Amino acid sequence: MDMRCTLKKNSDFRRLYSRGKSAVNPYVVVYCRRNREKVNRLGYTVSTKLGHAVVRNRVRRRLREIYRLNSPLFKTGYDIVIVARARCVGAEYKKLEAAVMEACGKLELLERQP
Image 1 (cartoon, rainbow, N blue to C red):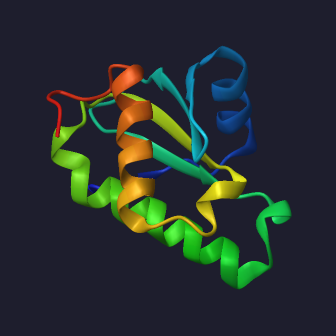
Image 2 (image 1 turned 90 degrees about the vertical axis):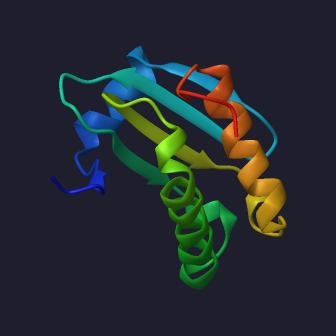
């Protein structure tokens, strides 16, 4: 089974935004909703307001890596969208990681705390 399942369809993102639970902090907004699968499907949103492509791709790569390294801590069976906010751009990796994990903790997505 592929560990990295991604959300790609606009309809999936829209469903999460409208019907999912969300948690907010200065760095990210995390939306989640149960899916009927045995894996987590992830999506990342980085607005063009955050900067040009190089900047946005760097933020996206960092968010992906944070999930990858912490994936054993997550419960399975969720669709998750992580939306980057302006502070993500200049943030230290550790602060960004703490922010993402804190938001996921608020949504009870974590099996155990890091």
